[in-house]
Length: 161
Image (cartoon, helix red, strand yellow):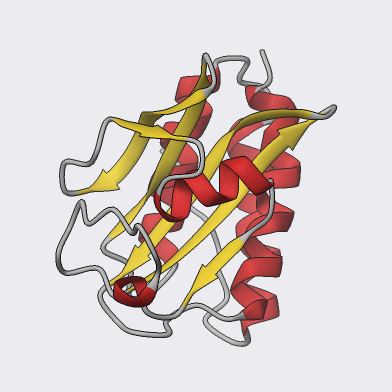
């Protein structure tokens, strides 16, 4: 149904193309769950070396599992607990090279070695977080963080309800 031309060149080209694809996928869809599902699939398909890509939603002041690609995951995460909870509490992107060195890391998948978590904020409200895990240590860098932050700026108003 969808076919995207995602560059295999530089990281900036990859995220530029992912942003265009995300925009196309979500532009006319009002359902937040459908949009998160398609975005987790898009990221899971085109970002290399991931073993989990998905969302946790802010429901009543805690993170609740949303659409994802990967193994079954933790369902509820309190703000401040683990990498996702730290991102939710601080509203700052968490770039973790070695999850085993992160205090309070929640090991939903023992194969995960590094993690990138980006808060999704719209009009001052925390909607949730994008969570990416990799079996490779130090898989994510500042370019990934910036690229995923840009993706979430496009997505945020489309899942705000």
